[in-house]
Length: 502
Image (cartoon, rainbow, N blue to C red; front, side, top):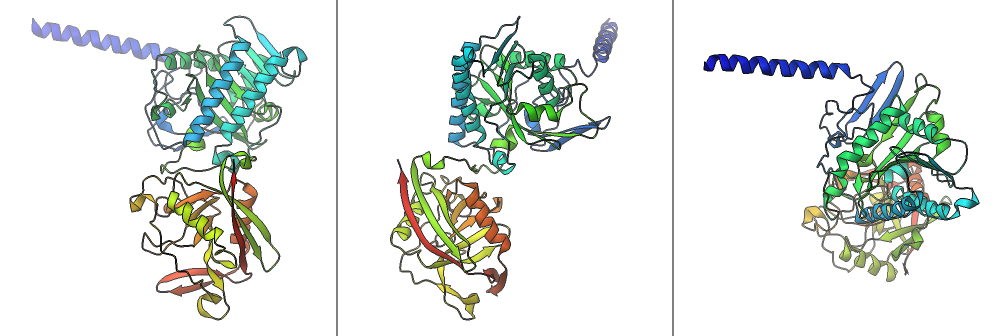
């Protein structure tokens, strides 16, 4: 009797599995909302080529975002993955964006049925226009916190692009050129969807999945949910950067409001339209690259990266101005924002040397090939030793090395382009006046040297990069260590001044 029951149960289980298999075969790729999850290889590059139409994506696979490539991934599951760290000021930018979007959303009042369109140039929409300008200002603030955004010279038109509800019909546009359906078609193809209906269906599934997720704003989990950043007003922001070989790089955002509305914001309507073909899908041999949140705002090492935005002088704090000049006529004042909250003794030490006038007349005595320049400790004296450089007499005591490998966990500044950091010997607590400035990223130094500020202006970084790339050097090896000294020009530190912005 027991044997017959086992056989019966086995047959029943087989039939159930067969039924599920057949049911799965009936739904085509464009209709499927849930497919096999992607691999868990963080930050790995994923690409697909079909019929000479290629979309490449770069994001964290652990998030299983599901918005890419016909929903390859799971929209119905929320990941708890946290790849790296996001600076608190970046969180604050996302929170301000969420609040600004909520103000705008209340006035738009999207409906599940019907259609609302607001042309922002129309005087009748003046109130919404003001709210939309505030929204675009905040969204620009968010993207300005991304080093990737600056490095790729991303287009951010003053017109502010278009904002459209995906699962509820509304459109805010700065011109009357595109309809709601056209904007959604453009957006759907940017994200790899063959048709708008699938894109809309995905938005509904996304909304349902996130509505059931209980998230703590104070927790790191706020940045871990399927590529989104969770804001204080309980909205989810999915930031992306789009790059296409036929147009400029431009930003795109998906925003999920607490009421369940999923909206897409396209930073540049014209560039987006050029990136896709409204009559078909993707034109032959065209490449669209979509970069997600992990690449934009997170640092795998856990050390912060800084971006470069106009208006840095409006940020309260303490600044240094480093006046450089070369014997062949180059001259630049480098603006440095000092980060005393991460390296207090290091910043105080640098200010002390600057205000005493010690740095005046010192030199940039070292070029670090491909990475940056070093100075503030030596003077140019001529002669053969060390290519004509010698240490400036200094009676000050060395300071404690404020970096992670020296037990100072507070300093999480990463050595990216624009960062200033303290030079030292092989001993951790040996820094005095010498410093170096990075013109490119060098993650290997993160946590091993006391970074203490960054240059907020790209033009200053470009100047340092020019010095690094265009200065002929002479290598001198002493005690097994090789230093590249400037040979084609002398680089003088005329003065370092300190000032405060209230």
